[in-house]
Length: 568
Image (tube, rainbow, N blue to C red; front, side):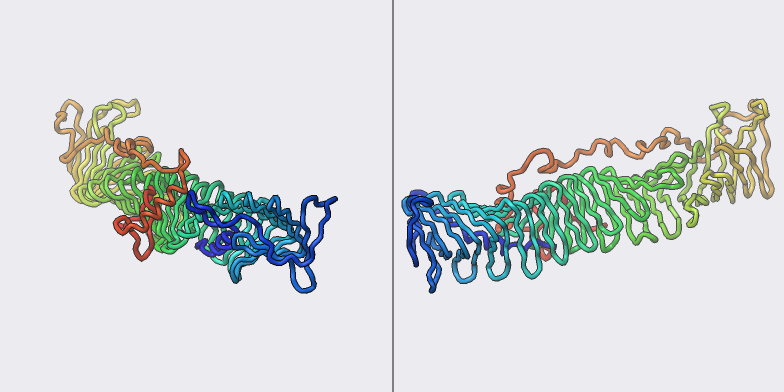
């Protein structure tokens, strides 16, 4: 996607303007000169003080002014005022290729103001500009149309209501209903400034770039057409196949199908309905992957309940049906009935398996579950939680809800749980199992404390409490009256209660460091930027070998608050 094909339009405009002269030096004569007068007459009643020239059978009337030649059928020339009106088949030409035609033209040699109107067309042999009226201000070094213009070549069609070319800046400014039609893309904008030397374009107001596989929207943006890179810094959104990227500042590169975003980012998976929020993210379209950091969180809908997954770094890779989510370093997750944390999380869409890796802890309502590793398995058809595996050193603890002082506990080598309607209902502990359980009668009076060891234990749960316990294979234990079981014997070996770490709400997945991130200051959002000065600075840096960071993929804009880094 690029805008380079409109550059010839700017060259054509520049025909009408004369380069600024050195201060203190006299420019060539401003007098409009008659080259061929043909038939001469006067009409003082209608055109007082004017000389009227008209074509003869051989040729049209011809004038010259500062290197430009003008032909027309009739010329009303006010020599004292150094101005003329050309009427009929007006043709203005410079050199061998640039030509403008119109029905009428007014020219003032002293003020260097001119106006061409009625069926104006301008051509340089490669393009044609058509408009109803075209104005020139040679003193201010600009030309413009205000009633709509259209540029056509073999590839592009460009239209806008207003167009202005600034000679010294070598910039053309299109305003009001700007539209560029190209086989590769379409651009619509309220204002687009284009620098013909650098091929850089700046967009203002609602602007949209639409390609075959993408759509970019911004209200303040930059695009380098040479290397096909740019960024938006106001209400920017990129639709990349099955993802939508939004942020305060969004950088995009069509050639590598890459985008990155900074501050208040939202990346939406339109197929799986997942959302990533962060303050820095990268999207690799061809690899179908997302990298996010700085208060990054992935949000997915699980049975009408949002699941929040956080890590210092998030990575989502793979096609929609086989997406893999990885949360690295200080990973946490939360939904209303299930939460947990560990060093890292690995969740695979295709298998429905989510692994909590390195020092994992899981809270299912009031139950604390720990082990060397924890696996959560979802039903691929219903997308509901199906089962739980805790491998090596499995331990489940819950506070006794009646006494509020004791803890119900069960441990074993491994734990296998079964979810029914997203609620943990059945728990099997196997190998070297032990249990401590506070038993009550119907009047909620403590009967005793059950302390047993055996080969396997099954716990049936109701409302997160143990409803029934079944011991398998040679259980060894007893129910002790509270007075007969010392306090120090009421905890199994390896008992650690971590209730103060429990994640009770979605905000708890973030640490203090996450909540105190200082956001990068994005240029151009709060205050306007002197774009001409920025463009001059940009060109200076591109020409400076010390600051020039261009590579085979091009030059990344200097001082933008987005960046491209290698995917981990």
